[in-house]
Length: 136
Image (cartoon, rainbow, N blue to C red):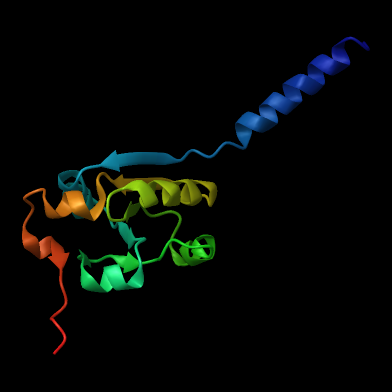
């Protein structure tokens, strides 16, 4: 019986580890794929660039949640059960944000491949992008 005890403990630990894993779906998508996705589902689109960059140019329907030390707190206002699409300028910063979203329990996460730079040069209609009026 003493020999079986470590075996049962090992089985218990392995079961605990596998049952705690989150079933998070993360996909790297192109601007075309995002447009199709957005027509099918209610996607929460977040821009993680600076406030200034967001005010200068951002995707239609995006909300600005700047990536900083408080990012984990900022994303708590999002609905974890709804899909989230994240973008930045080129894709590097959004990759970090995807990891935080995963760790926070978001189930369906999309990372816009190439960021806003790719979107602007993809040939998609300019009405997908909002540029505020120039200040006079």
